[in-house]
Length: 252
Ligand SMILES: C[S@@+](CC[C@H](N)C(=O)[O-])C[C@H]1O[C@@H](n2cnc3c(N)ncnc32)[C@H](O)[C@@H]1O
Image (tube, rainbow, N blue to C red; front, side, top):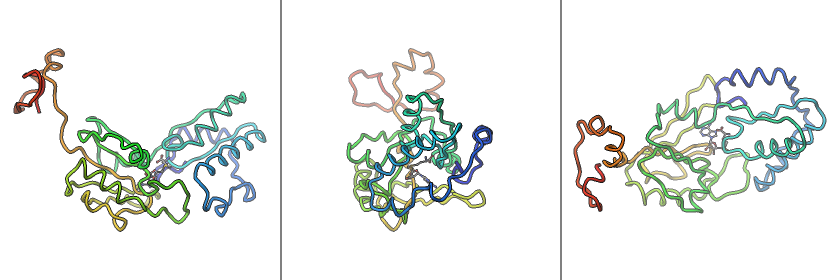
């Protein structure tokens, strides 16, 4: 719940105070050595089971995850679903995710659209990237790696992501390897590098990759006319003839 060095939202603190939080005793924790060499899915299932086990022992249980408990996190959602099926009142409180920190630290307003991908999902499904959108790639370090490493992932498949991005962006297009600060007194780390420089040396373990829009999306004249907003939107714009079926369909 200490969300990337930011203060936990007041709502969460209030609810947790009411929940009379007690921290698990050392023998109740899952030792790190048991997580080594395991598939993450197995560990996540263990987290769900431990949550449900604890729920049977207390009146009110609060479970803390880092960042937003539901953003790129599966055991929280699963534990809540099963708890509800078992008749408990269970809910999730939102918190500050690494995505929220990225928006604030990089000064982004993603109104032109934003695609958020999980790195492995992006690659194994060869998902289509919309270069007119802001693109955020999570879990770059564990691309193609379902294991767990307390010391940090080894980015073994980063080169394949670089090659995939090169299909969409020029080699010298500047992207950001972003590291939100984990302490309120520290600054975030923001490394700007070219697509071709996405190498093991340049991208560290917890990074989220941010790719800005390559260009703005095309406007459809037909829609502008339909909404009666063409005059306003076309001011100071240059019409670019495009090879489309209807002449007045698109402008750049
Ligand atoms: C399993 S997800 C958990 C996300 C977390 N629930 C959140 O709200 O940010 C882990 C991924 O979140 C991103 N992440 C987590 N901590 C980060 C940080 N300090 N800086 C940048 N990205 C971070 C990375 O993409 C990392 O691979």
